[in-house]
Amino acid sequence: MKRVLVVKMSSLGDVIHTLPALSDAAAARPGIRFDWVVEEAFAEIPGWHPSVDTVIPVALRRWRKKPFRDFRGPEWRRARSALARQRYDAVIDAQGLIKSAFIARLVKAPRYGLDRKSAREGLASAVYHHRIAVPRDMHAVERTRQLFSRSLAYPVPTGPVNYGVDFSAPAAPDVPTLLFLHGTARQEKLWPEAHWRELLTLTVAAGYRVWLPWGSEGERERALRIVGDTDSAEVLPPMSLSELAHRMLQARAAVAVDTGLGHLCAALDVPAVSLYGPTRTSLVGTCGANQDHIESPLAGHGGIEGPAAMAAISPTAVWQALADLVDGED
Image (cartoon, rainbow, N blue to C red; front, top):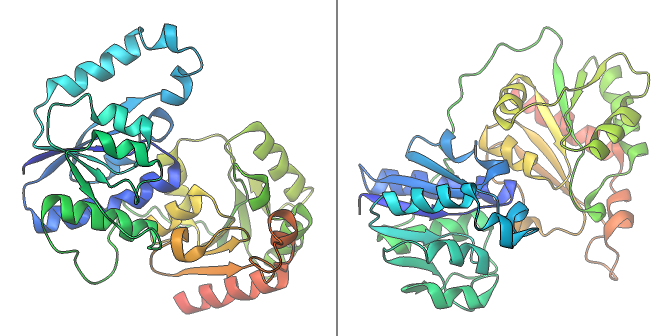
C-alpha cells in the first residue's frame, strides 16, 4: 500500500495519540504516504508528521448544529471533493465512532477499523471491510499502533514511541520557565485554583518564571486568577497550536491536568508532571520520555472522583515531582 487515508478527527489528545502509528508504518513500509481527515480545530497537528501529505479539515462539531444548511454548504463540498480527488489503497478509521465511519464510507477503498467489541461505538464497525480486534484494556497509543500494524501487515516495532514531530528548538528564555497547563473541558479533571496558586508560589521562590496558556475565555479568566499580582507569571496571548508548541519547547518542564496539551508535551519530549483524578493513566496517560503521572490517592476508592479526587493531590507533592523531573534532566 502506498497511499492511505486516516480518519481521526478529534479530540486533541486522541489526534496526537495517532502520530506514533504513522511513524511505525513509515518505518515498516518505506514510501507510504498518508492523507488525514481531522476536525478543523486540530488541523495543524497531522501536518507536523513528515509522512502526511494532505490534511482534510472537517467541522462536524459545527456543521451538526445546522445540518440542513451546512451539509449542503461549500465547506462540506470541498471536503467531499478532496476525498474523491485522490485514489487510496486503504482507509483506516482510527476513531471507531459512527461519525468517523460516516466519513470513511465516502471513500472507495478497502476500509479498516476496530471490530464491534473493540470500537467505542460498535455500530461503526458495520462500515468496515476489515474489522480488527484490539484489547480495550490497552493504552490508547498502543491500541492505535496495533490497529495500523494489523491493517497494513507489519509487526509493531519495539523501542520508544516515536511521534514523528520534529520542530527546531527555539532558544530558551533567560529565566528558566515552566508551563502550567490548567485547562480541561471536563470540570472533574480541574485542579483547584488555590492549589495552582500555592504551586506558583513554590516555583517562583525557586527562581522560575511561569507561562499559562488558555483556549477559552473561561480558561483565560482562570489563568488570570491563578497569576494574581505575581510578576514572575504570565498569561500567554492567544496563539495557534504550532505557536504554542514552540513555546512549549522553550520551557524546562510543564505541569498539566488531564488535557490534550499534556499529550502535546509528550509528543514534543517536553518533561511534564500530569495530574489525574478520574482518569486511568494505564489507558490514556501521557506516553513518552520524561512524563511523570501523579494519580489522586482518592481516585477509584469508594467512588470518590472529580473535584474531591483532584483536590487530594497536594501542591507540595507536585512541586517535589516537578523538581525531581527537572533535576533528572540536568
